[in-house]
Length: 423
Ligand code: GDP
Ligand code: IMO
Ligand code: MG
Image (cartoon, rainbow, N blue to C red; front, side, top):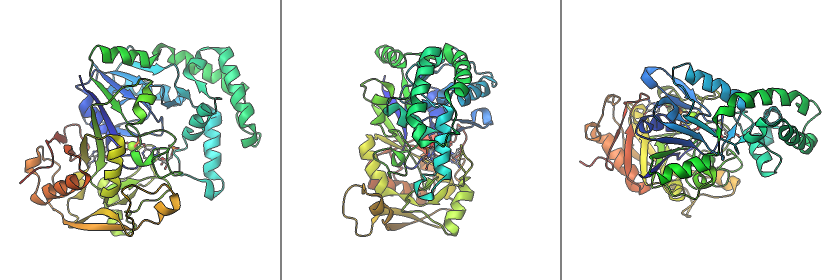
């Protein structure tokens, strides 16, 4: 069976959760491989909204097994609440949710460090979700992190917490949580999570050997990748397809890598966004698209789609098909613009230097829009002619075929297509 991935191609919130929900009905396994509670994946199973942060979206399908792999970070207290919310909907997770014993655990100290930095000197801010993501990953790579296995053994946990507190002492003002205040609640959380703990790379290796259908669910988006994105205004994990093997601890190859992009573009938090619109059109996009953060509620910055950036990230992420979401939101905009490059920028890639990236001035192509409500359309051929030509332009520029089109937040409001619709 082919392995499939759903990966964000912009700065997150492309509608990954919605697509994973549609596709995971046909999957045996759904696997998160990076990120943690910073993700907010909105889904409407049976019309009732739920936002998933840590849990793979496959939990919403009774026959799908869900792995939280070792490349993730996990806040045990938040995860316990999330499990309760999903189980409260009658979806039992025993034997269906497995958490890697090596997953990096966010401890209260990480939340303090994240919040202190975000509320301190403006020059040091990233505009994070304040979920402790950066400090948790930093501690993993500094080899002072706490892992899921530590939550199951008091001596290991005490040693791990002490190491983190000792090494980070120089970054805190003495009011940061200490070992004694953290250890008891973390051990309690460990007891609650114990039944889900497993060696998930081994489980995955067995699943692939048995030819199971496996779907990898990306969080964030390629432009938030810790190395490839708009550094330092990025998250702290590898969000592209390249992050999958290391994130699951298995040297595998993804056959069907579906890259998700909105038909326009959004971003939350600080950092450059060349095609951002701060005028009435940007405002109209935010209201028409309901562009407010699923995790933090912050208004999302909005702008036109940046096809140059999209083409670049498709190459590095190994994307085989595009999924275009929120096409319905562009109804009634009259003329549409698409970013096709930047003035004076003659390189095929994006600049690594943040000052150079921030200075990019987009070049646009204008395309005719449409006024019809397309939210009930269920096949590509039924889209208005101008919507079809918008998709063709996009596909030809990016050089990756369109495989899925989404026209609404509901489960059924998306359909497959074999490339952009031809006339
Ligand atoms: P994710 O983080 O990539 O899963 O995306 P979010 O859930 O953060 O944000 C996407 C938002 O757009 C959610 O509110 C979805 O319900 C909504 N959505 C997804 N696809 C579509 C679509 O095709 N049309 C419209 N109008 N909304 C959509
Ligand atoms: P999903 O999976 C959009 C952004 C934050 C901030 C930067 C770093 O829903 O697409 P972090 O808390 O990760 O240290 O914040 O990354 N960010 C997201 N933006 N969607 C997300 O996830 C995001 N996760 C993090 O706003 O700019
Ligand atoms: Mg989101």
